[in-house]
Image 1: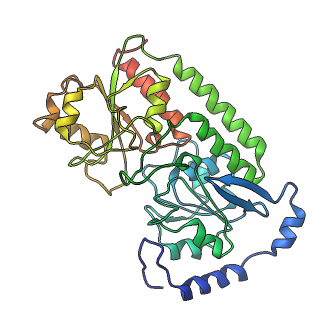
Image 2 (image 1 turned 180 degrees about the vertical axis):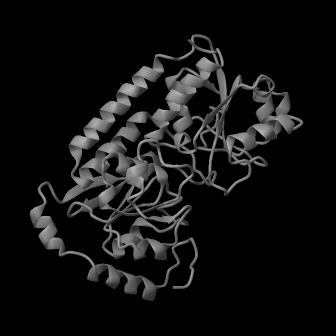
Length: 343
């Protein structure tokens, strides 16, 4: 089949043919519903009613964060594909991840998603499951395919930047909500409760390692020319509040505002948390590339954190709202201890 655009501009003829192909390979919905206790499941997903008639058997996850929740719930055998990765899979999930086909390292085409014959599509971001993304919930619904968007994206305003802005502060409870809801959709509530309990315990333990003195921090995700720095209210906000840190750009509601280096330098953070990404879609993706850039930039190199090598590396996944955000809290706490900024 010919390659099509990343945006959901697939023709009606193609969509129809793929839908028929999907139907020809599926089991009878009425039989599945009749045999599944607790179904249908209906949720309010970002103001949209989501109904799943039977336990999904061919889920496609369009973002790494969503994928890792499903893998952590033991659902690899009920997944038909994954896509859009920034990092290697979370440690401990490698074997499960190997069971699932990767449709694309970055965003797949809508055509490729439909070829996997999904009975559920999940995503972490509006930029993936929304206007201008791989597809929309409405387009999938026309084909009878339900979709689930992370509640971390609910109510997000995308008018100010491509990553959107938040009117309210994201809390870790929203990540727990995503785990709980996906567990309900798949009928594995016990696994969901166990995973949330584990995450809560780890967050409490990590918070005990917060520094006693005030420490300012900058979160740099990617791009060297127009760097994406964390605003107040996304996953880095969870990390900084849990550890009592002062995010130097907590005056921005944007998720990842792009800020010039002159402005960054005036904030002069004590510590720079840098995204160590393995993807190749922006400049300065790896931690090594970022540090090299900072040390050689005429303005950035004058910051205290750069002069004193106060860097903490995090995966990109840990800097986005997901179960990896808990990893991020633990890793920043450990990094602060190594830098002598906490006990």
